[in-house]
Each structure stands twice: as structure tokens, then as C-alpha cells.
Length: 326
Ligand SMILES: O=C(O)CCC(=O)C(=O)O
Ligand SMILES: [Fe+2]
Image 1 (spheres, rainbow, N blue to C red):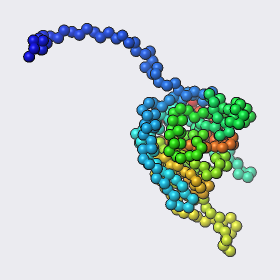
Image 2: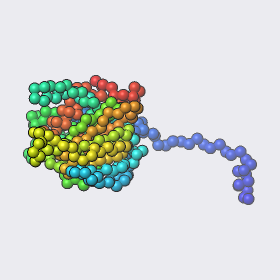
Image 3: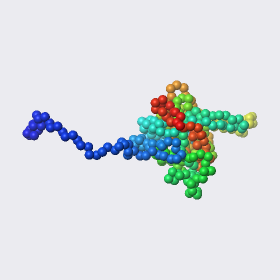
Image 4: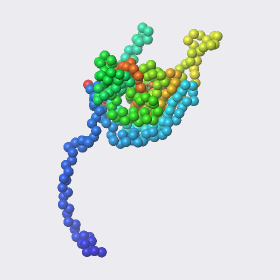
């Protein structure tokens, strides 16, 4: 054993000189964080995704390959179970619920001369602009003329897709095999079992024919129901005018956190879908759909029904509910 080692064993060790910190800590520990997405149309700045969620979205998707479901008439689905790894999907759910502005839209539905006041039974928000316009350096520009869109073009103020959803949009687009990219992102937040969406199809003309819609679930599990639109009965001697017949079986899929369903081909023109109300304790769920609107009517429609003209709400982590924000 060398002397030095023995010495150091028996002698009390010389007290270390205090370490002198030569580098100063940044005043703000988050100084390196990317700045939030901001835009004159946003009521609040929207933060960028935490690094670990971004990395998992960019490198961890699709977590499972999509399964095609086309075993019924006109049905053309791809189900990724899940698309985003579950733990990342749950973190992404909490991030979006905390950071996005939400709305509880009320509107008047008119059928003939009957008007009904509708309270949308879920929280909604939307970003995007139809394909006749695009955002250039934050400004909405007409694709044909290259000039800023005149104020008369839209009845709403379109909002660009914020960075935290743009990362997901690009990723989904790459895996959905769409010819033309998605230009809209609709977000639904179902706080509990009373929140729902009734049977409908996303078959508006402003989406063009055979629309491709990618629908992603985050957070609590919910049932997703699909049923074929009733088919008119024709050719039978005793068929009453307007008579319809059921086609195919109703489908019930349980959508968990991170799952994605792509609806494409003839699906929207022939099938209805819904998230029914649910009894008992039901965890919050976020649904994100990516779509492509082809004309300004799509932009007007989506902002009218998903932002509306009422107040803005934000998630409050103390009361654990959406609270109206002035
Ligand atoms: O929440 C869902 O899974 C469905 C949402 C939906 O159908 C829609 O926003 O059009
Ligand atoms: Fe839908």
C-alpha cells in the first residue's frame, strides 16, 4: 500500500474549498423554452409542447399499425390501437385541456319555420383555414391572388393551427395516406358522461367528396357508435313513399387514450357516428379531428359551431373544471 493511500486513510481529509460557481444561472430557468404560439386571433398565447411529448409524437407514432375495417357496406375505416403510446397520450390530454381556449357554443337550429335553441353538449375549439387561403407569416392570404384576405371573405377570424397541434397534424398526415393535407383541426372536450355528440355524419359539401377525417382520442375511454344511414326502399310495389330500411349492423368501438380512427372513402356519405352519453363516473376525454375544407363555407361553419360568439373557458386545476375567463 503506498504511503499516500495510508495517509489519506488515517488523516482527517482536508476540507474541500468551497466550489466557486463561475457560470451564472439564467434568471429564468425556462429561458431556453420555445416561445408560445401567438396570433392576433388567439385569445391567449398557446405554449409549445414539452420536449418529451414532442419527441414521443415525432418518434413513437404510429405505436401500432392501423387495422382496416371494411367488412360492412360503404364502410372504410383504419383503427390505430393506439396511435400514440398511452402514457404520452395521457400527458398530451392534460396539456391540451390546460392550455387551449375552449367554448360552450349555443346556436339556433332552424328547420322550416321551427327554431330550436341548442346548447352544444361538450366543449369545443377549432383552428385552421380552408384551402382557398393560407397563413403566411401569420397573415391570412388568398391562395389565388396572393393578397391578404379581404375582411369580407369570412364571417369569422380564422386561427392558425398552433405549434403543439401542428406537430401532430404533420405526423397524422404522413400516416393517413392523404393526397392533400389537412387544413383544419377541431377539438372536443367531453368533461364527463353527460357530454356527448349525437349521431351525425361529416359529409358537408365544403369537405369535398369522399372526405378523409382522422379522429384521435386522448384521456378517458368512450364508446364510439356507428350506424349506416337508412336506405330508401324502392322497387317494391307496396313500399310507402319515403320508406327506408336498415342497412348493416350498428358498430360499437371502445376508444381508449391514444387511439385513432381514420374515416375515409364512402364512409361519411353512408354512415352516421356518435359518442353517446354515459352513466357513472366518466373521465374527461379530448377528441381531435383533422380534416380538409375546400371552400370558405367550411371555415365559416367550423368557427360558427366550435368557437361561436360567447365567452372563452379555460381549465382550472383547482376547481377541476372549465371556468369562464374574461
Ligand atoms: O369525439 C369523437 O370521437 C367524435 C367527434 C366527432 O364526430 C366530430 O367532431 O365530428
Ligand atoms: Fe363527426
